[in-house]
Length: 82
Image 1: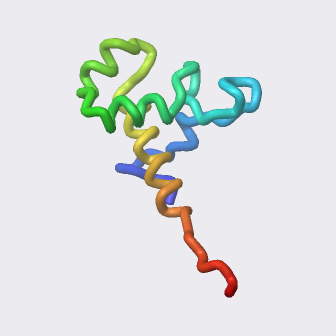
Image 2: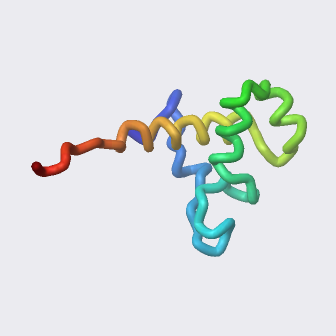
């Protein structure tokens, strides 16, 4: 599912081999999705993240979370053949 609280993450997350070696970034920035997720996982309040990175919006942060959710839903582990 690509939607998180009514928002489609592909509207805000870009994967371009010319930007940060193809890492997913927030559109219009050079901020990697993994960087934003790392900040959130470390307990950094969203308000502080938005204050430190003025080009970032609340919807961008939600898009990062939606992208992570998308990846978690897509991941499958398959047993190795014996």
